[in-house]
Length: 78
Image (tube, rainbow, N blue to C red):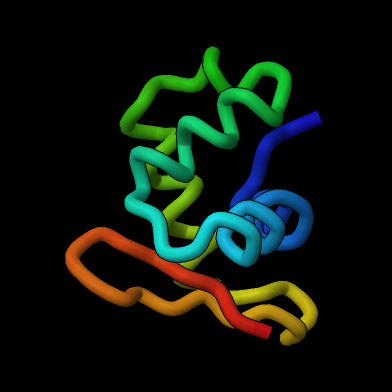
């Protein structure tokens, strides 16, 4: 199955950010590499585009809001 920004926004990023607080994109990608089979096979530039696309789109159901809280750092809140 394809790894899409909406998949990340719905199933992975909320848990990572709500549990670990504000994180830089590189730290988010490290968590995703550990969590999602096949994510490490995606070139790093595309990994970053997927993560940024998911964060900019916001929470899928409106239950979690992603916020940019600094240069390259993102957080989530309910």
